[in-house]
Length: 186
Image 1 (cartoon, helix red, strand yellow):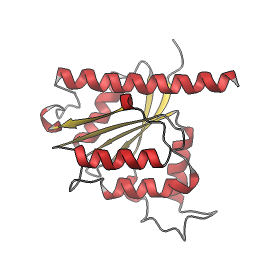
Image 2 (cartoon, one colour; image 1 turned 90 degrees about the vertical axis):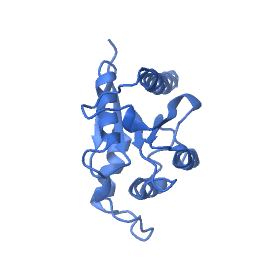
Image 3 (cartoon, one colour; image 1 turned 135 degrees about the vertical axis):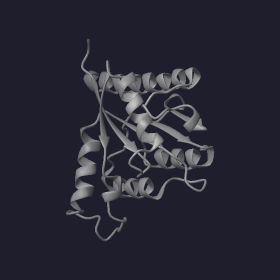
């Protein structure tokens, strides 16, 4: 079997037992054969974005986050929608990444899992495209009414949702493998 792909999972919720964290746990279990998932646990510890501090010596938490992004072969974002938009802590973390280009051309999957999720999903999708993440039509999805589809034991209980999630993750894996093949051909 080929080496497992290193995935950095970012949860847009800061709640300790959020449904999005459980979704990441379910994804890690579903993809254990081909992904090594590391969860970024300190999104709330990143300070408010301040362009004055985004210099040669940014805050240590930002340096750590950027390092994790650089080490990862792919990124998985699972996030709720807050007030029809992107959660502030997630948008803040992404704002710190713009100048470092840590997302540039990085294979990325986005799963917005919320009550509805469509508007927040579209806003975040646009941001990810602007910062040049490698996201395709096959590597993002919305899971509406997520609380009826992911249980407290971190299992996806809706078969159609699980099939779609697996499809998104296999598309992410293919993006990573294509990027590796392109790099090897150079």
